[in-house]
Image (cartoon, rainbow, N blue to C red):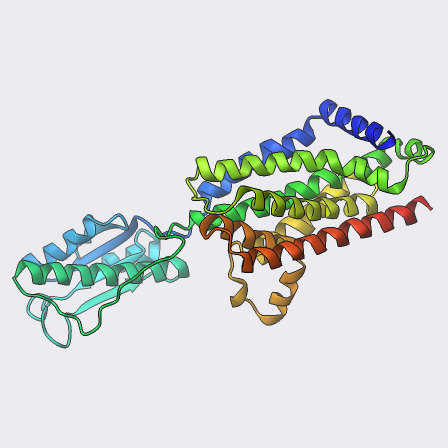
Amino acid sequence: MRLRGLLRKEALQILRDPSSIAIAFVMPLILLLLFGYGISLDAKRIPVDFVVENPTAETASFEASFGNSPYFIPHRVPDRQTAEDDLVAGRASAVIVLRSDFSRRLHDPRGAPIQLLVNGTDANTARLATGYVDGAWQAWLTQLARDRGVDLVAPVTIEQRIWFNAAVRSRNFLVPGLIAIIMTLIGALLTALVIAREWERGTMEALLVTPVSTTELLLGKLIPYFVLGMGGMILSVAMAILLFDVPFRGSFPVLTIASALFLLAALGMGLLISTISKNQFVAGQIAIIVTFLPAFILSGFLFDIQSMPPIVQWITHVIAARYFVAILQTSFLAGNVWSIILPNAVALAVMASFFLGLTKHKTLKRLE
């Protein structure tokens, strides 16, 4: 009965103060739209300058092949100096120089004299542009040989098969990771303010004189926001599937259980912050600093953990989002791979137990 009364009190408080509903539903909607459309590791429509020293049918054919590609925006410039100026000014990401003897040396064993200049300030785009140009060159050579009735037989043929993300869309693994990052922030924010708000409003003293136990007090604060958080999670997953067209190959019950464990860890961290701080503003700032930034950088959502220094890799083990990102990306793209899902789910359960247990301990000390 006492817990039911606390739940009713918290539910009425949520309805009277719609900021919690906004955090649970409006914030993930806005953040997913911003990050989902704003972050992409795909390089398309790369501006490329062409310098053709001696125009021929072959140079025209090679240049035209770039115009048919979705990856390039080719632009002919009169000389090398203009192309280099465009590269420096950022008007071009790459420059392709076809020398005057390009057509004559096209089938020379030493290779045709093509020079590729790439703007390396953005390393990811530079790598992709280099790979795309090489692929376009090989495709054009093959087509040219066919047009001339010659079969190009390579000594080694590579049959490429891409598993789990055949379209190689970066959005397919970024959006599931984004859900973990966003729900880390939202879960912590939802509960980071609740106990601090009681202290600010002077209602905590009234709660302390009631026969409510510490466990009932924390459950009364936790359960309503857990329901809100799960609602925000369902909204985020639905947006990923329906709006961003990310395939989902896993099991919804499995994802629901994993999401509940993760949300308990995030809410537990928020409650711990709220217990330590008596000021809502300070609690909110702490929640943002200790949840969003570490989750964004150290969860593996955007930066590969295996590429990080060993000491940083060790630090990532205390970031709850690391485990949930792995579960989400696996569930969306690969399905129920238990060798990945189970260890990460266990880690989330351990972290949830730790944060909730520590919150109870801190609350008991404060009440004493």
